Length: 341
Image (tube, rainbow, N blue to C red; front, side, top):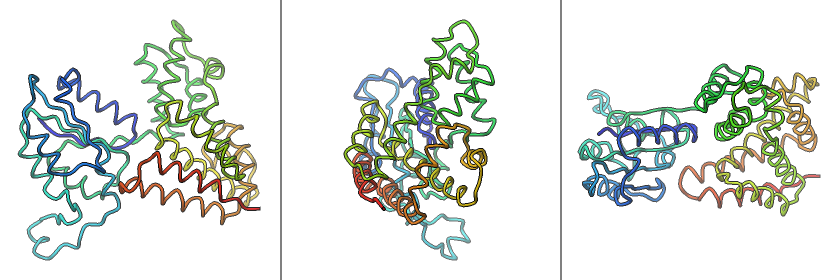
């Protein structure tokens, strides 16, 4: 049974994983045959021991390893020697404790279904390169806003829910939600029930799809900018209570700081509000107005400082030095303590 590497958007990775489990009869396994390992905590010996064990009273043993590739993201492989270059060998020192994983996978029993599930990783990731020869690799990036791919995804997602959505409604929901596939899928589920038996129109989207997601993020960023640490923590905790993953919340903060930089640049160039929206990739007047207000309260030094703190948090998570929840808490405290007059 082949092993798989799924990396990219968390929604698409989760969906691909569910499909693999279903097609390999791994969805109804006994708990003894289902294993979930966190890449930052797992070891090669532990993984090999689990994968080499035969399943108990089932045809398959499912092993899912989350976030392992991310722990090696950004690590450079050692320089190849002339002998290695001549023989076509790939240096393995960059794999550290995971050197030998590819060989171990090749020797695993066919009853093991091994899935590596990760977020977005670069093509130069040393573990991705090492596993490419022994695993089926699926790169699953989210469709980019503003392109036909995301519109097509929304249309297909609606059809999966036995619904038809008009082009105008597709444009409206993308404008409100962007390419957050988890939110799009959830809102399409509500819309399919709301407009049962007829086409989903843009008026349905406007009436049903709440802007609470945008408002909460803007309010939280406002609180951080203004030094209202207690409010920032409270608002972000609400998002977590609603089931938002800390990684998602951090990504939304990153998105807003990016929009801040784009708005600041456009305002420095005396761009119109319409031009600002085009540069920011949105036609939502709510998003444009709120971001302009925040940009007026920022210098370029402020924005650079916020980017640096976000980068440090991202690296700490990917390198397994800090759990996402703790990284988010420290990030919020740090960001809201940085207030400039």
